[in-house]
Length: 258
Image (cartoon, rainbow, N blue to C red):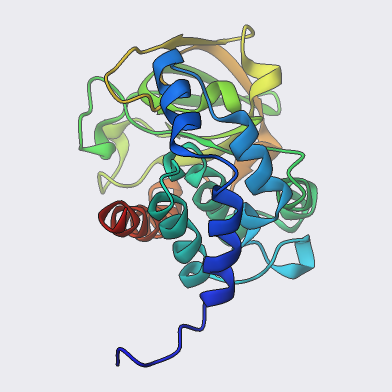
């Protein structure tokens, strides 16, 4: 088995070549400044590496999860920080699997081209812990839009995203037959939302993951930004998180080699 050729060697070599342009000193300096690796992320996006899982029909590479995992592994294996960019890969999966044809046509080509960043997913809440079914952020439909109220915590890369995936309850917990029902997924345009119902408060922590606390106060989200069917957001969320877990596992393997 050790002599079996690596079918992803070309990808590995290309990612390593890109990462050589960003030595350890680059990341150490950014960490001291608690800054985001903009130049590094721009290089990955410009090279098409973060659109690996987007189908070719939408301008991506259509390489699949295995190739995407190799990319993440090689970034960390080279001393880079894949955590700064992995959201761009797995967050779009929710849109790809469960979005409407109109949503896919509108967003996926822009994400693949790097003109839109979808780095952030707002799920975790201070009162729910690891039990996602207990989130209380609500989205009430009214006059062609959803009005969202609640709070999220430990939400990464909001300041470096154009779009955010948001999980909210469209049916109160007390009214559902199963606790995982009644939650829905939305696409939030952050440029339109921040300062207009969405407040972002950065959280300083030891590892700089650009974490934030979000406060949603009558945030209006257009009804067409609902992904899939109302009330089935938890299932859509898990489908996206499957890819997240595989990608992060690959990053850990890269860390081990580094």
